[in-house]
Length: 394
Image 1: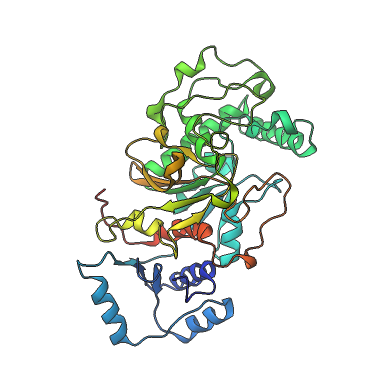
Image 2: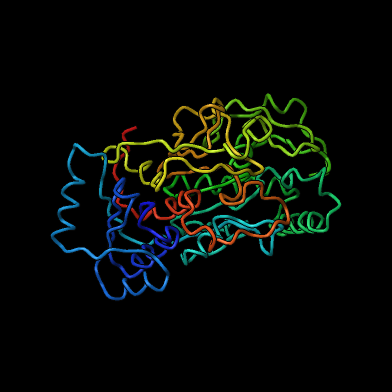
């Protein structure tokens, strides 16, 4: 999985998942040649690699033993983690086509990793319990329809989405979309606390935490829910209920395309050509979880924008790991934490290979980006639940 040898990093994850589906164990060699995978040698696996265009090397049992022996040495920052079972994957996404694409569903499809889609109805029926891993599609859990009001309130897609959201909330027994979304967020919280793995990108990250912190508080203006917001609602926000963020100031104006001070989009002054974030390095033997999540063939990854591009560094809780950051700009891009018995990862930005992906833009063709480091970070999270866990020391 290093830069020089692998022609299709993304599909390599798919072959690894495919191998796990056949009840064969895989060793993930952390920090060894870009986080390579050691798979059993079988004709069907070699053939699958060839069909999918994935580069591989056949090695002898003695060579594999030699590699594993070197990796086990305390002198090297490497580790071999056993992947045991293909995780069952759910993507939380609205019914029907959205006016934007979702990076996770695109890369799962490209890597040929199967997933199922669920939405509010299934979540409220506790169907999350059927899945090992959950991705939150570009979503607004606050009931403010993505804060698209100023620019898109007359657009056909916005009007249709608002009607559909209101109809679904009514069907589910709620007077307001914001109330329905809060209960969905609480169910997702309980899923993670109970031992689930949750991954979110773009606005699903901060809007999820904001919804949790505003439980019992009306933060929606009349154009969103038909009545006024609570006076002085900022002082009623409870940061103790969030997963990752603290001390943020909510954006009150419905005409501003922003949820809160968590997001760095309007605060950053970074030219496109120099917009990169760096991945942190962890001890593979002592901290295998963040090491797994940061496996890549480069430690410097191209930045990319989104409604929530990145996170204000000093508004992240101290118990949350910042795994990718632009330190000079005081922003975090890629963060991870533990909640109860489960784990969550938040990744800022919308599409790792489309710098300024906008509403209505064509989707990214991943055939043009088979070695994308930004997309690799997503797939690290997909395989993460398959790993035999060790206690994290950091």
